[in-house]
Image (cartoon, rainbow, N blue to C red; front, side, top):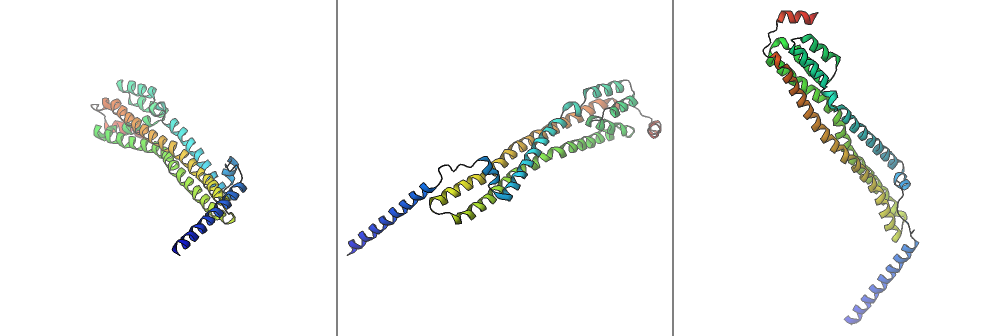
Length: 256
């Protein structure tokens, strides 16, 4: 009795599996042979929301490229630390001509000239005050440069977030579309939609990696060149350490 029931159960299970396999095979034959998503389907397959996200990713990538180029330009050594300005100020201070040194700084606007002018403005206060003014001016110039470089960090953080947003919205659309699919076509449709959705994550990472790498390199370069500029200024104004300055005469010249 028990053997008969076991045989009947196994036979029913075999028939069920055979029927399921046959339906799956028929569904696979009905599915399209080429299910690879093309460029048009990747961009426009997500509907209005997907297109909007791709536009944001494009803008983010353009912004990243723009600020990488901007970082390279603002970190140009000759713009921050002009060699001819160093020579002009050094020659003027060697000759004891402070007015010529100030004029040279005013003719060549740069972080170096700004720091030097801050030092010259406090020359009557003593060398310790001059050093403090140089340090403060160097920190200010460094902050000006870093404010522009920091945008690379912003784009580096935005890229993956936009990619994740596109992937999540694509997954929502993929699962919503499963209601209209049956059999093997359901699995094929889901795999295709997930593949399309993941492309936004790929694009986001392609933005994030160079942006964060560029930010790190530019930030380190900015700090290094600012320290070098500060050191250069301190070397240039060493001649003022033992200089005697007539406070009243200097103030009169400053007011004039």
